[in-house]
Length: 270
Length: 259
Image 1 (cartoon, rainbow over the protein chains, first blue to last red):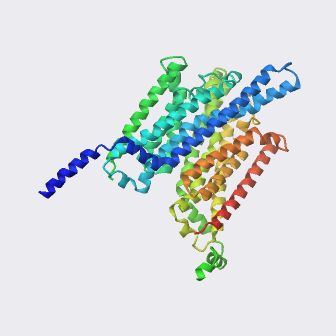
Image 2 (image 1 turned 180 degrees about the horizontal axis):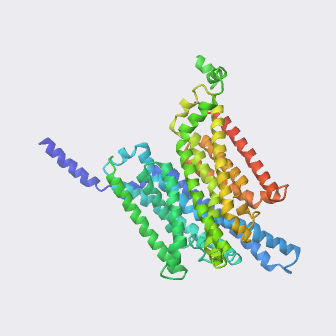
Image 3 (image 1 turned 45 degrees about the vertical axis):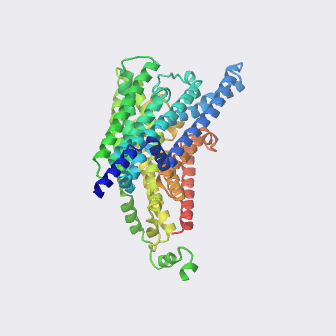
């Protein structure tokens, strides 16, 4: 009798606790991953601050060069050298760094978000606390991945502003491969995809370092295939349609990777 | 009481004095501990080298054939630029994956307590490991730089770019190897300082990026020497000096760290 009563009470408790509200899971996700989350945000903020400072300098140099007369004078040549050599070198480096920002987020944040629990064995505790491993996996991926993608979108917008005076001078357009994917919808979509690739490989390999290395290879391969084969064959033209299409298939890929990660978590013996 | 009076490492000192330097043993242990990296990094580089050789043969065929010259100027050149871009980040990737875990993993997992109390003075351990693995990374990178230089040669012949261009200059074997060495040491030193692999990897990326940006946009323009080879030698020299200094700093940090 007592057992049955207890059981009923347990059921009632369970009803009250199930499902555990998502906001409580946000709190735990934050507690577990705050170091990585704050680091990623701090690095993005530092990159943004650098782009603002350097972007203003480039605009200043460009205005001085455009106003300089006569163009053949030594002072104009000096200004020209500043804009076309040192400013361009910095802008080119910024562009290179922007190419790898999504990948770095995928490697450092994505690969460790689930693999750390698996590597240290704490997943045995985390997955058996009533919330359930599927919901935990989804919560961690969404609560970490989505804010990072939003921050990346802001950085992409800033980068578009930063690169604006450089593009015409260096014969680049927004459709240039290295410019196209560092702005608009594509940049946050690539960031989200990189994060999900990292998380999926972390779940698959259960170790952070190998997951990071493989994430790098998979992401690089996907980026190269997109540059060389997919993007030139998009069925639509123009900057924004192409951005929308690329954003859409990357989001679909990210959702598929999340599903695959949850499936792996379900199969794994705790 | 005696234990309290003895400074850390004193017992190890005595043990070390009584035994010859077991370089052979250190080599073996380093191999056992780092074999995953020592195998996977060369395998990845070898795969990339094979890709570059295949692409290089094709590039030469396109370059020598007037009908295919269009491919050389478009597809091949785009591929070469992508490869050049990867070459910019290759040293720091070797550095973070090979260098950051070398000491950080032992500190993170606590195994340093065992490793550093086995009769070998810990500075010696640190110096031996870093020198061996760093030299290995540098030589590997140098050889890979040679393969890349061969692949890239037709584009320099065609006048698309030149060896004095900053983005080509630092992919040349001598300087490329030196950058790989410096990246490895920055990573190892960060690992010793932070005692955790992942943060050490992230910090290494930042430090390396800052250093390479500073070099490309400022330092190189102020070298006291001119010409390709003098500039290569000069850059290689200061990177090697920097790496040696980092080994010393790392060994010092290891000595100060309580086991």
